[in-house]
Image (cartoon, rainbow, N blue to C red; front, side):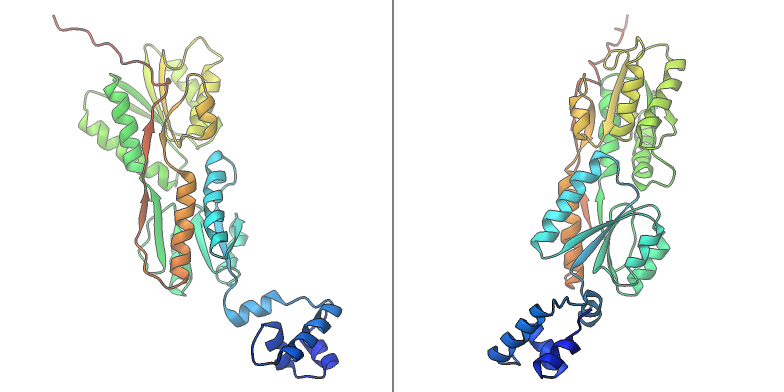
Length: 328
């Protein structure tokens, strides 16, 4: 591999002069700079990115750490991150798995966005103590080098539960997320609070996994226990779709016998018949805001923690309001 030492030798100048010329410094004349650049091109010189990074302490690359790549949420989230990052002169590297964690301490990236359960909070706090800049989307950590950009999970789950209750439902199944999921835990807190306020409503938690298989398994349980119309709150749309697919194989009908609401309002859910009611938010805005906050942290600017606003996208899957018997 050609080095700047080789260029310096052929050009008859010092190594420092070559370095200045390659970096566009005005410390060398235009004539000398042109000569050096021509020789570099002739020798097919390629800059050593690792060496330049060590010298400048900047890679202009942001790392995004995800537990998984599957699901519609990630595509829109990453698109929002990419648009903002590229506009600010940064590129993205998307990572998953324990081995990728070394990119932070080895300074292969300038900062990280975390949506990855495999990252222990203690590990992130340790890196923050060393000066690494981090934005978390899946937990709450108190550190000047860490910023939160979180979904308003509690508001979303409250909207879903209250909507089902307003429709007259007295029995609500809740399909939870995987153990250790921050989003699932926050949504379940809201479910419990709403249930405590509305004591005549029975709610039953069914362990899930945020995947279609979790919804299919929950459908089996509800089918076995079914006696009269019930409501189901799935803590994400992936499980809701799995649930719908399994119920479609029976005589039960979504929107008539089982009233369903999901969370995330992914694009696929919008094409279900009846259309799936779901908690909606902008995944693209979530990603864009995460990148914005991280770039500000890297630049040494002050940032405030952010929360992503959610709304209810009502569909036909919740069904009409249940008629209550009139008092005699």
